[in-house]
Image 1 (cartoon, rainbow over the protein chains, first blue to last red):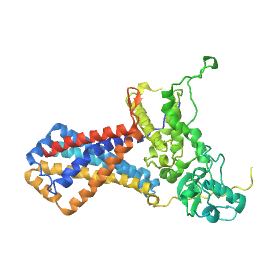
Image 2: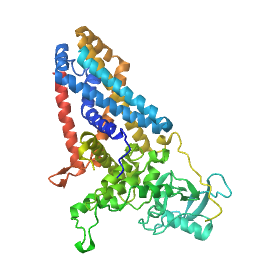
Image 3: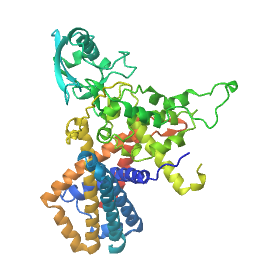
Image 4: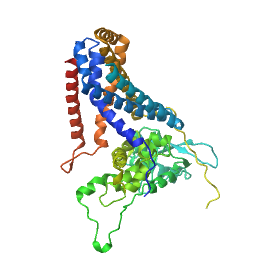
Length: 119
Length: 247
Length: 131
């Protein structure tokens, strides 16, 4: 029985799915509050001390990094295929994949840096 | 109801032209006529040179797939009255090379179909004396939907990924692979993994979902593909984390 | 074997194939929603940076976020992120067969359960942020 040709697609797809679930469940409410409701004054802005306490909690730090990393892989995966199929750039598929997932990795590292070094 | 409807039918005669053109024909608009009936009228009464595939005329053989007003349809299951007053544009099934008129080249699918091994694979065949392989109704229900595929190719015609890259194994082939993977009598899931767990296997699919929308038999190939992605990803993860469990 | 080999005509997929059918366009919009998912990641990290830098930086960030262009961007982003969430949740039963006690959970029930989970998670996160 021949072994399947090694490909990273299954693992990337798992992260894409996980990222999709995370983005679907957590982003709408967070974006609504932090990007729309609070700036428009519909909800009074949270106390700086409160936000700092929430963000500094080790679970939040870890949770946010995981959330951001998975959401970025999700976006990278979708954008890579959209460019490839939407603009018919199939011959650049390796370059597109590298740039997309490389960008996601850079973003994930940035998230880790913000949540564990700066904060 | 007017008594005629205009059909604009794509023609391609490689011996005289470089690319497809259109011919227009007026056919009777009868309440019970399918587009196939219209084409048969053209061939019988108006223009015997028109070429197209058809057989059962009842939506089970999968021969008469074509593009009607830009949408992939079975000609025998599409009714003229639904397009009145017309005209109705009839072209060959999209995403396939055209041989002549409405006849397309399907060899690519034939190769892919055999590549996914759409038959029961057993480590060891039971001898006939031991009787039949038994299967409960619940076990049948697990794969029955995927066994409904009539190989009509409407899904390949609807799939933008296949249109852009014919290396993609495609919806029907994967649905048929699943029909066997999910069959309790089958032991060949590992062999099918080889061809499906590749970029041109299931991973090219971006879940557009058009294949399931186009399918005239309710097979839901999109669902089959997404379910297989979970199977293949789990298998890959297992072989990575628990390599000693491999055959 | 025939002597005459048919000259196959291979049609080309137009560049704007995704505009040719509403369902294709809806699909591409669904995929592009991921751009706004990425934007929100950036926004979230910028907020975290501002909070970490102190009260004054946080206030500055709040003022910036009230800028009309940024609000417009975030409203559009919210619409797309919502579109992502709804399409992703609605497609889950098609992609996954869930079995409970040997019986298959019907699709609509699975979708409904995910929406309930969505509400619960949203409520928890809202409480976490607003305090």
